[in-house]
Length: 388
Ligand SMILES: Cc1ncc(COP(=O)(O)O)c(C=O)c1O
Image (tube, rainbow, N blue to C red; front, side):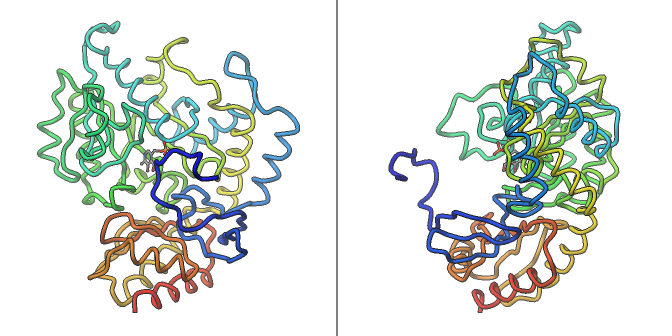
């Protein structure tokens, strides 16, 4: 059957058919401990009953009407997200992280006056992002992604993107030319790039440069958002105030939904007709997000991620073959001393633990945020066996 799918992904070693909490089962009935969560998506675990019930009930009530008409659940979710971000903003719903970022990039261009044709004629449309970043696979999100090898097969990409090294404030200072730059787009922690944490204070310095030059600070919280790093959003560790925040992954606990939040004044650059989507914010996806956020708040997932992340990080650092551990909360990478990460991830999978190789020499761990101490210890035991 896989023969009918395009060859976008490497050969898949396992076929999963069922999940519950932190467990997955394959077609042969073998069980696995899932410490990847579908790439940091299933933050409440698989088949969470509250989310499953909300989806089932909504499926019987109203799936979709499109954005030409009002619905009730999306606006409710928008209000909750605005509160968790800090208030004073507006939300656009999308269906993925890349789409949330496309919205942010288009908003920044509109706000900056595009290539000189905007109402304020400022002609600022360039977006500065960091090398090693990942912002998605659609063309503009790909152009913002700071990984030249991923650009190569798809040239020419849209113009108006430049990149600087993560943590290099002098390079950022040079890159933010106020005549052409509309926005800086960064992840508070680079996820796909290797779980790279910028130096403390760097984000605040970027904010200062943006303020000085009237440039938007757009934070891609697609992977870091919604409790994973130990705060609702990664920027909250640094006490900065963003202009735009994008999110997706954990928002529907597996139901595809993304969102772009912007300060109300920035959001007002969009007028009807500027940007849209058929599915974004539809009742089914919004019902999943509403249920997900309600459980996240009731369980105080940021606090749980902080606690569990400390235990997991300490356990990883003590394993043989682990040189160092980086990340925050439950978004961690273990840098290996002398093994290929792909081999270790493959051996862990065979031993019943799902993790992935986030770089050639580091494995990523992003378990669900309700992970128990027993599950953490079980994962560490499997990894110890694999690494010995
Ligand atoms: C930080 C970040 N931004 C954007 C994306 C793209 O999200 P999606 O795959 O849902 O388009 C990802 C996906 O890994 C991501 O980690």
